[in-house]
Length: 311
Image (cartoon, rainbow, N blue to C red):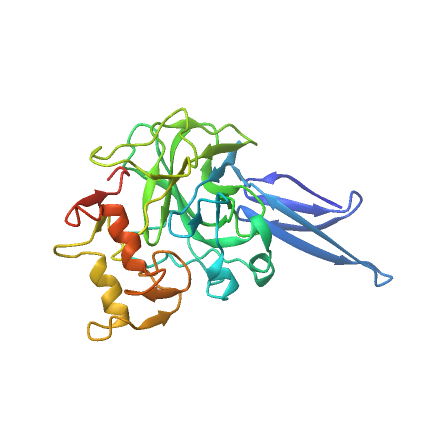
């Protein structure tokens, strides 16, 4: 059994080589169909399809990135504490979140089975991908919420496939990786997205295009054991890391644990959980405040780190 295309844009045939089973309208993404014959025997096929847009197929991105919060430099992998504690939601968390606006994407859902995978391909969290105009890097053309694995691979909701966007392949695009409490990172220039090809961008190492510099006042990412990681500590979900001053990310932790109870520990899937271990802590071992302070600098607590993404 296989999937064939060609009826019309956005339409696919599920076929067993002899009989057309169904002609259905599909959005890009993974699908499974089960067919039962007259004898009661069933056959199941799964496929990830990139539907047409006129004469084009949609752009596919094969992205790799590390989040600093859960990154363990000794093994060059991220931990998956949120998954182990069953805190990762099945539906993406970015729709309606401040400073995250979906263009074409939104409402992506994964499954319990995907989140049950262990080892280096275990899911760490949801991330937010953008494809932007190659001539106007501030212009977001398409977005998708996707899943990042412990080894940094960013995959579609099936836990395996490259991420598909609802815009045509062919043109060049800037690709951006963002996260709900880390600063985002953007490629330094647009790259082409050929048809029927997943374009690889590895943010764990410096790509040939480099990283976009919004103001260049701080590096786009933090280097740990020779690997680039997205800066952690953006509990206010804006475009800066701040330890002191107005609208700082330290008070985002205190707001969760309580100003009068700074030693409290609060579990959950929360923006102030900077190391993504499933709890928010202001004091004590493995606390989230030290993640933020280490990034702005222990000797420079009033320093500010900017998100180096075009805006």
